[in-house]
Image (tube, rainbow over all chains, first blue to last red; front, side, top):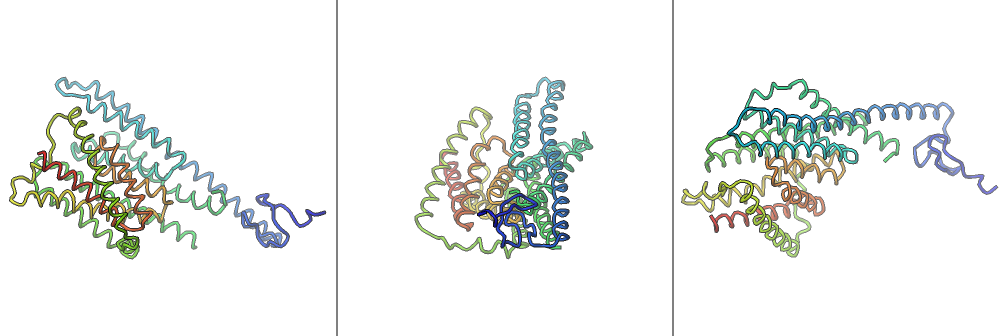
Length: 174
Length: 217
């Protein structure tokens, strides 16, 4: 019976010694009363549910980066069909493709580095629209609902990333 | 209660970054809008950006102060920084020269802006090498990075500050050299915990390109 002193935490199933008051991995009150242990587990469950919700928000923000990429590419249709024969559109086309690729890249990168991708994506998006608006103020109003939705999703995503990192740390998931 | 505090602090750091960056975008974009660029207009916008930077740095002075010390000073590192900056600058100059030749045939030399003035050369060095080196470092590796470090880890702070630094230049073409350059500056700032190496590299880099412009107008 040499394993007598070794047991597994009820909460995270990590080994602990009989002398430990709290689990080293998750902080579960090993020597606490039943009530304390139940309270700990319910708190943890709440946080886990919160984490799922935050993950969804970050995912939505990341999806909006895909949307921006697609919409940017789609805007080429207007450039191609705009009757301006004497204007050289190759510069606009190349810029649009690069920007679309940049947003696509950020969206993919967001899987591993969510905060970097979302902050950069939001900045790039704002810069593009501020520059457009300065050169032609009417562009602010074209598709303003979509713009607002995208910005709201991105800002919410950035906020969620901060919360998510904090909860992950608390749950020892990092 | 403490958790809420930490969270709201992080969010307020991010808001600070957002406000600062928005102001920078507005200043730089307005400068871009001016149809006929002159030296005076350029200086005016530089002064505006510098004042904004100083204002924000002042608002977070307690946290940024330590970056202006130069504890790890060494002549070797300084020399290495200068050599590195000159080399990088020359390589980029050559690349940009050929790129400009193929992409946009029109001449884009800063020198013509300053030429007419009796102290044109000095003003050009001031405006291209001295002021950006000090204020961009203070803004991006100083204020912005210090705020980011409260919110994200070091690696992400390096990436984000570099990407924002690249974006504010409004130049897609410079992606290939501006982004690596910014990452290098940010890395050195984190590693040495001082702004001075960055300022020296930035200054030398810009000065070399400035001198090339003067020698081959």
